[in-house]
Image (cartoon, rainbow, N blue to C red):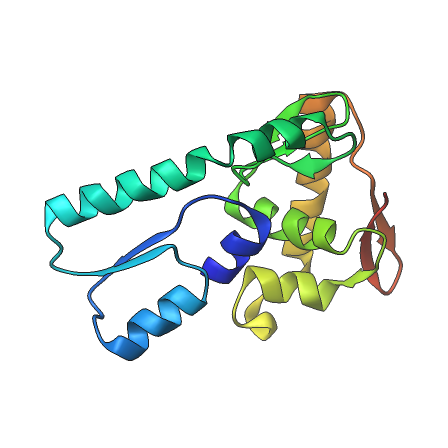
Length: 165
């Protein structure tokens, strides 16, 4: 999840965990965490970490402003909203965010149903493919009613889906 969040957003990621070994810390940081804190954590250290991360993220304000000026469909810098070319936004669920993030990262390329399902669950064989179809149907309807624009997502019979540029 950390790797996905890092690749699709510029949010700050602080891991707060009970695993404090060096290998665990290295793994968490290499996966994209900005900070890795082991429990029990001193509240002053946590506050200082969050303050430092907030200061660093403040430098991303110019990047976020640039993102606002870009035309076309995009994920908002927080990663939880889909922004239409006309400026309308739709809040996404975790599953919708995973699917849209993957499709947008491969815009113009076919993404197989199996790949999309693998982004939603660790066990693709225990996942009913009709759930993906239902998710896509509801997402299209949600985007259309929320933005008054059609999501440029096309089904490719027998293959999967493609996000049209």
